[in-house]
Length: 299
Image (tube, rainbow, N blue to C red):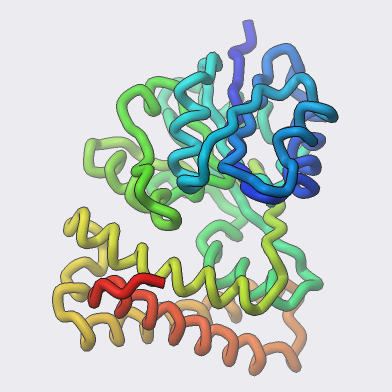
């Protein structure tokens, strides 16, 4: 008998995008009576909840005050009835066999948590920058048996994992890394399977890209203050010199990934310099976010 799969989708003021995500789940190759879709509306003000109730009666809907996506995931998982829990985001579109492939992998027994490929729009410049800089490790076309983090926009695990581990509800960004590292420290292996895809469709505004980098910077430091066994944590303790080293290293990694994935993203020669500039500006903003967290500056 095929196992039931609960799919958790946190959303905030993205009713058009979450509709596309839900529609992709309603047309999966996996039996629909074995898919439970749970949308957690994180205090939207654009009528998201009413829209979902009207257009997607099959969806289980949770509404709550705005407290962040990790808190939303925890609340969705708490009511999930599936033997397997799959996570994605409202700005993602799972591929037609997304659920089926997750089930096939997790039913083998030895694998308890797995993530997949996260492609971005090859024709939108900012989408290329986000795909390379923020999801560079999830563009590969080969399996990996020991990844150090799985993004929550494309993750599935047996329910027993979520019965033992939760996301930190206080975080806005960075909870993926903290959750993954907690699993690793307790002996679990995290798997990457490129055949399991979701297309990520983030905001294409440059201001959104910069805001994303700032919040990443703050939470990059925050989770290493919470768990000092994480990579880069020792450099955090050096304060400004350490933050500069980290930001510079991340900029070099962005640039390396640009050349590594230039075929995947169909990067044109005239796009190389603008991408490098965007990566540089992004890491300056990331540095400011790191510094703000160290100094206790709110924004």
